[in-house]
Image (cartoon, rainbow, N blue to C red; front, side):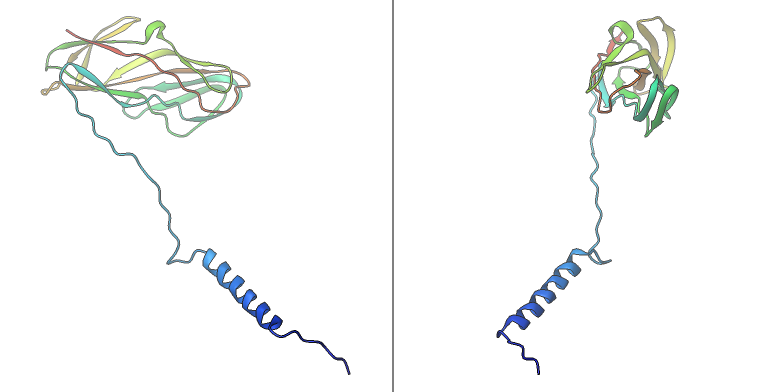
Length: 192
């Protein structure tokens, strides 16, 4: 006959510990009643003053995978597109820089491209440049004349508001390091 020594309370302690572990595991698993998902979004409003310019969105070429050098050409229309060349695979949405202005119906306005018609983007790797800066206005901004530095328009809306967008060609280097690349540029408006 085998005899086992028993220590009072050890068996109970093991059962309590096992029960607590099961309860903790069950609480950690999401159930239909406990599963939640949330995300946050920005909300904003722009108040436009006469003879001014207000930025509505930043220029964003989206995400890309680079196998060799190439370009991403962003068309600055209301439904912007990005076309790539070389070893650049593009994903995510392209967003042109978008601005709104307020003048008077029939007034002329000149939009000046960034100095040198380029934008430098810096990040963890070699700088990238945006060249061939293009400006496109909504139908209420009627093109009059263009030159390498300026786009000239007539404001066609009855209330004097207008929207224009900025795009260009992002030049991606071979072996471009991954990361976020940013830069700034100036846009100048002359109301005439």
